[in-house]
Image 1 (cartoon, rainbow, N blue to C red):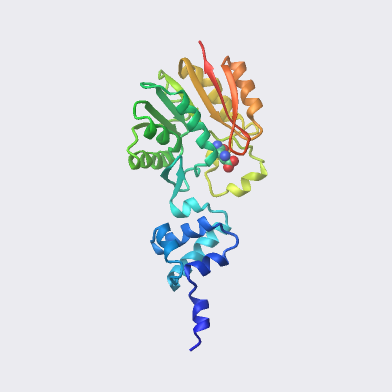
Image 2 (spheres, rainbow, N blue to C red):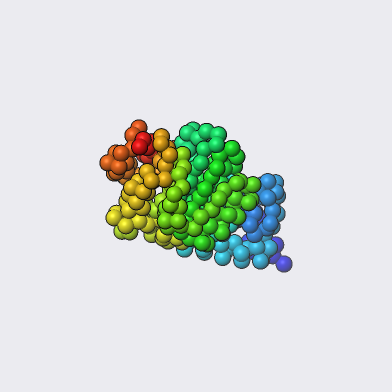
Length: 277
Ligand code: GLN
């Protein structure tokens, strides 16, 4: 019997990992963890353990899905954001690291007893991260998608975060309410942006906005003064080339103290302003 061909048929964790040049080490370990049901530490410690046939087949299916554009987070069913593990599925955008900037800027402006709204919450990442960190703040979160709200509610429960959820087309069902902070990571990509091809597995309604990607941002800027307390803050994530437009829209609407803040990639990613009646 030829032991060499056996080895080829059943690679060790480490051998499999080294053969995957298109995946990062972390991605390999996450996939190995998924097919073996082992923790990341166990994967590292047992680098010489052999993969069985079913596990290899499972890995092949996962690699195929990734090559077709499925985010690894959907395959794993989770994604880390702001130090917390969020459940995700194809009903919600995968939380992005740059959105942590929005959370940080909101946390800098929050005080005890404040009310905060996350409009278009998706997986709930922003609202839950803030509510988990600041249980002394009242957090509301809205989304138009019932499926997204299901994911977001699950994430609030998972992290013991107190968040009130509302199914709403932006502010539609929130008339009469007021908040000290309104934060949003709305869809902001133009329908003809070539970058969208890489995001085909994620919900289009969470990514694409009319008017070259600015429509949702413009709607929130226009409406939010009706829902902000005096001196309340509006904080918006936007695309890499939208900061100037967003600052202009906020200035035209009467916001003050408007500024844009760069993300880790040195791109103006969040613009904020304060509302004085
Ligand atoms: N930042 C995301 C991306 O470019 C888009 C998120 C959004 O449209 N709100 O991949």
